[in-house]
Length: 302
Length: 302
Image: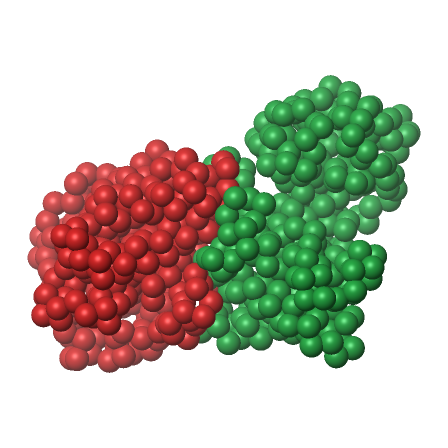
């Protein structure tokens, strides 16, 4: 029995896998409620895990968590979006003690990449670039069948490639990063600035902008053109440095389907170097369960 | 005895290593003379190798060659800068037959990265990004102690990251690539456009622009500022996706020293994400012998 967790800023999920590769069986969802701090959540995660396990001891625990984190030690570092949680949180150790099983923690985008690689759109492929386009833009790289971590475990920050050197300031301290040009948040912000109705934007997010563009609103079309062009350029850069067999795009914003994939593929077909232009750009297959599948993979390796 | 070759558009070199890790003993340099085609050169390379080996049979042969190429099969593909050479040239097989030893061929920038990793500025480090700034910009990535190849062997095209989406057209078909903004060729072209004396540029290349900038010429200073800023942004992007322990910059243009490294480090210190800003940016240690050292490494693995 493998236990997989996915910790997010709003919701956390715990799931059980009887065997690696089977569809996940049971999932419990808990609100994160960051304002109460970390330790009450920890006890709820442990209780939910025990309930799912029904008295069995898992052979391993895998956790998808927000970065930056140290995957070697399973320690969450300072979390910009969860300032109420302690710094240098030894999450792997805390869970291993309570659940009695070896525990591995990795970046949520990395584990989503691993999940797609092993069980989703990237099955059977050894070289894969995965991007998730949602409130932010993250990603993970599979190279030679293995997740690329880099020296600190920070590799794969594909959302912080500089696409437009004098572009808008990004939360990371840079300017014109892919994230600040093409994330869901960026699309909504630009649509607001272009005068699209604030109430629909607040309710539906980037989907409202794609809908307005489809309905012929030229302001929305311009926003989408800018965001998808930036995303296409980001993909071109990743093709040139990684030479993957395919690129998988996931995250809420990619629900727009062809309205996003079409322009991204067009940028790749026209601006990538010969030899990279035919690289398939595919939608993710596991939706928001990709991270849980990836967590199960590291649980099995733990 | 290991045999290493480095094939370039102007010169080719053949070298012998008695043991991997020792300084290279003897090097023979041959003019490439592309206009005569490939096969006369092949026979000269073989003759030079035999002369160096003095009757011994090498245990392996490693060859640094211009890309694009297929490192698995040791085949050079269509070479844009050597149109007189045949397409799909089975270089590894041709050399293995003649020299009687297993032969491995890889991209020259990849093998320079490998040389610096094993014997140069990147010794002892498992995650390394190497860029060579010369007439073009190439590079190689060491991840987890291994050269990153990607699915076709084309990975590491770091010179074709898009830095300025609406920038000048690049030979690769894109626009605003790092290479077209920061290579030696790009620096000279921009200096010419800015009105610097053509004769010195023709004679000294980018070094003339660095010299003029040091002497206070504001046009030269602007050219250098633009090129080093682009290079710094390219390095920032590579830090974010690979998280290397260090970055090594080699190639003729980096002979400018602090006038190049200073601005590049300043861009990294101000625009990289926290956690990446302290990454050392070091000059290459092996000069233009890096590729031969890397070729010796793959010769030993052949």
